[in-house]
Image 1 (cartoon, rainbow, N blue to C red):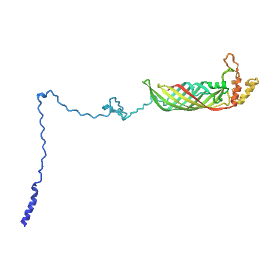
Image 2 (tube, helix red, strand yellow; image 1 turned 30 degrees about the horizontal axis):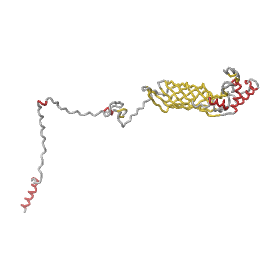
Image 3 (cartoon, helix red, strand yellow; image 1 turned 90 degrees about the vertical axis):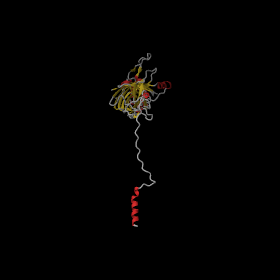
Image 4 (cartoon, one colour; image 1 turned 60 degrees about the horizontal axis):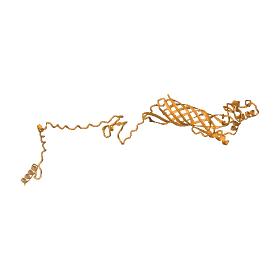
Length: 358
């Protein structure tokens, strides 16, 4: 029994040394075969060129910012950048905003308007000239001042026709005339732009808006020109004046600009006195004239201009001579002041002028 156990243990210890019939033998790694030697060149191959390997394409370098590319689409140059965006990329829109060539900040501008014409005249016609000054505190903001003189300020032909044919006329305040005035205010430039003139010259323009306040001198027509004498007028004093306007400022050169503007002058029109004379003054002078005494002998206020109704008015008609007596206007002026009228008038004018910037 002991002999059998010893024999069994001996067989168990020696079992790993024997290979089983079902196990596959381990394969050895394949050895690399040596490359065949190049064949020797024959005489027939001497004329054929030896093929060279194609070089690898180098990666395209990005273009510097601001580069301008004129190459066709699809090339490497078409992807060059302009301000960070591809120039020829159809999905990218490049917008370039050019700065103003001439700056306005801290500049001073003197404007001359030789042609100022009223465009809304119904009962009055005005033509004049103006002189303005603008101090540009900022690129789009400045202070402005302007003086205006209307060398033509008469009632319209329509109003004179009403007087001649129907013996009617507009109220004195409604047909009051603006001799001239002065105002000051601000001017702003909300936006500006440019356009090409004659395909080669770049012209800058700006939209300007203005607003201001001041005073204007007014007068009223007492009598139209007719067979009885020339047209006569009476001063009705100074009035508060407000101004609002807008237009274009076109800059051709660094120092010269062209201005085209519309300005509306608004003023309160009243007829409470003529030539500084109130109703009491006019009545006193009229009584002196009817009595055959000089109007200068009437007791009037210190503001009344008696000389306006004294003497004769120059008249160029050969048949009339210089016989139009100014005192004839006393009754007309008295009736206007007696029947006082008031209105708010808008004198809308077209201003065309040139400016000098320094």
